Image 1 (tube, helix red, strand yellow):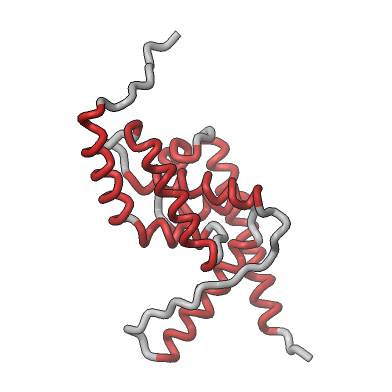
Image 2 (image 1 turned 180 degrees about the vertical axis):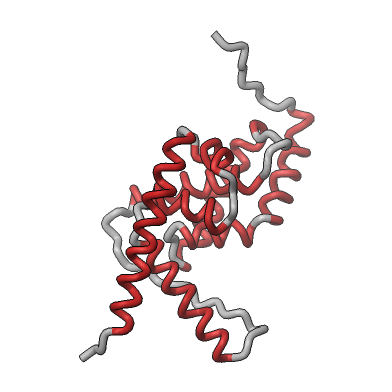
Length: 186
């Protein structure tokens, strides 16, 4: 048997933990929102899901190992929050894509970026959530596979398997969307 014990923080540490957790959450909020969106959350769900992420982060903050990167840990929480939400609301189908545009580009470039982003998000939407999470973490957020396994609490070889299959499915979905976009309507 292991000597590992869960230790609750001392009451004098709670205020400092709350403050550190809040600062970390606020500092990583743009990343949390992007991760929620990449995992299929719609704009009308975003605020509630971000609050759920904060609640989960606050509940586990005293167990967070500060020597490890925060983003993979956060992504694990985001993944579990989105998974629970999708299980709860599995019969609801409507999805909308974000209309965020970087104002630093000229209008043509902005439109191209917006269309490419919409296509990638639509293709990601076609991937099952477990594979989508691994592809997003590794290929978009550049998280090492060891950190993905730790954050999602899955075996390392499962990460490799989901990554390989997810990339294949993403490529297929992108090609299918490109063909559908090129076909004349009507």
